[in-house]
Amino acid sequence: MYQASLHFHQLNFKVPSGTSRGVLTTKDAWFIKIWKQNQPDIIGIGEASIIQTLSPDWNDEYPAFIEHVVENINDYIDTLKNELIAFPSIHFAIETALLDLKNGGNGLIFPSAFTHGKAPISINGLIWMGKPDYMLQQIKEKIDAGFNCIKLKIGAIDFEEELRLLAFIRSNYTANEIEIRVDANGAFHPEVALSKLKALAKFDLHSIEQPIKQGQIDDMKDLCSNTPLPIALDEELIGITNPIEKTKLLDEIRPQYIILKPSLIGGFSGTDEWIKAAESNDIKWWITSALESNIGLNAIAQYTFTKKNPMPQGLGTGQLFTNNTDSSLRIDGGCLYYE
Image 1 (tube, rainbow, N blue to C red):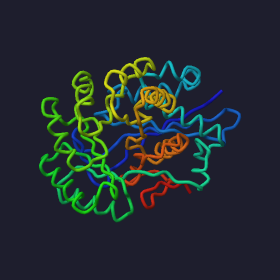
Image 2: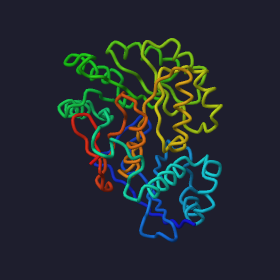
Image 3: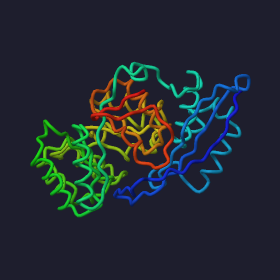
Image 4: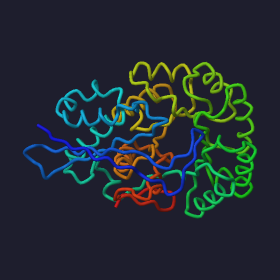
């Protein structure tokens, strides 16, 4: 038999962080601790982390429901996949806590060369939306820090300003020197999306994430078949839990890439299903954290390493908060290390 406890923690951003859906100043997280009744000193911990404008399981009843789950933890452990399929953040937290517990309760989720400090994970440097000078400052800092892949959030400031920022990067660094990914978070209207992709493609970009809002299947399919710039689905994957439906979506839209965020798509088991669906359709993928604290980021990073994907992964968010949890992760030269 297991026991569990719940701890709420509101993360505070060092700098208000802009996306096309608005500016984030705080982020809510719940930490679930799980232990066996006969071994109370060994504790596993997982994070249920919420972005209220994005997480599919968020509603006003979420805080009460997660308390109910923790109070009845044995019922949910026994039926984890079925009972919590509509609550990917809670599923991810319990899945993480159980793996942590299994491996001794020291934050070791997926033992590997990464957790032994022998191999790093290549990551992209994230550039947040803001005034042009602020974005330019971030770009310079990431390049100076040794990143050779950067990701820019676009779609919230003037599009011409964003093109000028990209022009600045390309005037100084070729595509061989700096890989650029952009993330529109669904900001473009379908009628103008293709023309904007053509304008962006002039700067030798690696890809664009979610150019139009999710749920517009026919429009996204047309974009992916006509785009001059590789498209990666992100929000489009959220809320789809059936493996058959996952394969059907990718087979219909045929994107060039998909972006996988375990806490939004059903934890590690849900992510495994998306990887299988992608690879069966010859679609490439990479894994991204979703603004978790270091507890969630640690688990996602360890999982990501086991997948042996050589592309830069999106795991560099742990430095955004003033009150983050302790971490064994360190970023150096565009790579994530475990110490």
